[in-house]
Length: 419
Image (cartoon, rainbow, N blue to C red; front, side):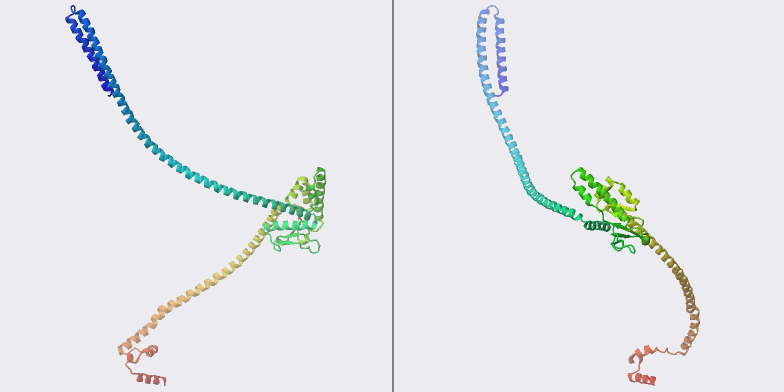
């Protein structure tokens, strides 16, 4: 039973009660006075009966309505629950598919991450192996470098070895600057009538020369670098600076500057180490000025390269000037020959014009004068009806059948012609 049926039953019972009350009022109107008590009793009994009836009807209706409502509610709840269950099952199935898809994606991503981790681990092992190998190589190279440094320190203790090392450094700078031996410079070439022998002699334009010495004292500088106390460092520093000045003075006595040999008024003193050159400049820059006063230019590998670039530029400029003069001379000779060529060409043009006029005279006037008697001869032959004599070459090529003569007659005629 639905809620609508229950409400209708309640309304019907209420209407029934109202009807009973209305009947009771009619009876009371009729016997208002006489039947008051009886009516009252009857009313009470009727009211009680009505009440009992209403109670009974309302109770049965309520129970029936409640039962029907409960059954309808249960059916409705069952249907709703079933639909919700189906919808939940469908949604659960869809979510299960999504979850399975997400699980598959997560599985593939995890596999990729696992593969990447394996590759990274393999790469890490390789990198660590390479790093360990590189560290071992670096350690071995450091040991070798330490040994080489020690050997170099021992070697530089010898003046001869220092000179060879300076020559090697200077040759490296010369090679970088593009200088070639016996073309741009001479090595260990003795100066004539002087007896001194510079380490390098640079060849300049117009037979000028520039000498360079590469021997430089480094004993006290090495001791300065190895000294542990400030007092020892100051002592060896002063000794090294005095050695540098003494070396500059010694170079000025070597006749490296000799106007009779076309040398420049300066000589180069090569210091084969930038650090040593900077040390001199920082400790006592007056040594460089002292060298310039004595026409000795101190130069490190970098400054030597700059000087060589200037020398190379000057040589190239002079060579270009010489080539330019030669080119101008050749242009003068070419202009002279060109004028002669134009004169001969003009003379040839005049001769060609004269020949052309003679040719036009032959092809016009002379040709017409020759054609007049030739035409008269041809007219005469035509009037006399004389045949045209064949050419000898054409007659020899004619066959007997073409000439109308037999072979014997032809041979006879040839013999007669030969006789």
